[in-house]
Image (cartoon, rainbow, N blue to C red):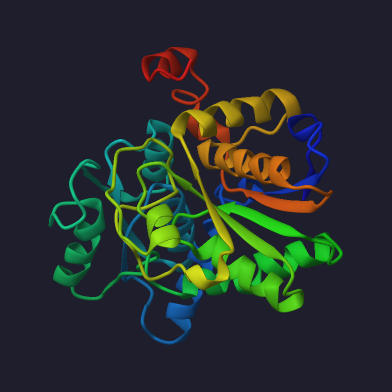
Length: 308
């Protein structure tokens, strides 16, 4: 847990960030991979030598690859072709069988990111599909670990939790634990433009999915893992806002976080700027910027996208 300084200077709030890219495979998703695999092994849904199949933007895939190596499992991951080459290279290094799909396909398309892993698992005898997007064990992992750690590290003095929403496991599992300790704690989610969560939360309507570049946040459809009743408010962040915040985080705090970390910082600053009194804000930085050196931290790429 790190207290931010220059990146939140002048906002009148204390902002603390949990640095999750210091986990073994470099992201917050190590927590859910470990929990879902150990639970499945314990209750007989999974056995040594079995195949684990999942769709992931890269970080859950890395965590599952770690568990596959440690537990003697095979691993096939469905990943969007647009995923950073650094993530794909890491997965190949861990021995993962990659199935690359077109991230532009609509969620109902059988060849889409949302459907392909289910089809592979259903067609493969003995395959285990953790289904991180709909499996509440995802949230449980954070209820059992991330929430208690933050509560202890902050000595119980927290006013707000601000975090990105992807599968919903991190923010909902952590938020549920924190609210049980202190019901006055508010939970603020950050969703990228193009995701359907923001409209669903504020209007109850599904919303129209659109293209966005932030990896690991948002979704094209409403999924089963998030518990929206635990969320008090939701902000919408653009790719540009998230990526510029990630670059500022590196230059102002010497914290090299990815785009979802930039989105979290943007959310914490947006909240702090809206408050009339001082508050203690906790946010979560999910993964490292080393996986985005050819994109977010490349001036050439940023200019090509119109962000610089």
